[in-house]
Image (cartoon, rainbow, N blue to C red):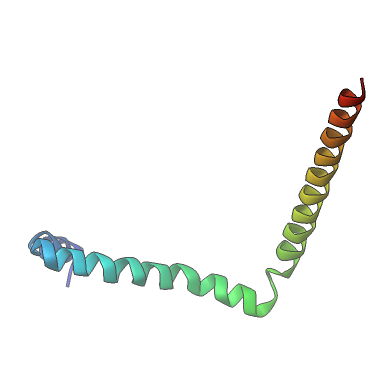
Length: 81
């Protein structure tokens, strides 16, 4: 079946058939998209990126806590004065 025939067939679907097709196609696209990522994850190629992301997340959390402490200290000092 050619691309033109596929497009024509899709355009001829009823609204209900199109909704069903779209749901199936979205799921299929997700599976196709995820397959290479799953392979990379299983092979360990993503380990470095995962480690970097974890380190960045920890740094962000640390900075957030420091910021909260600084604000808390500032408000305490302001209350005293």
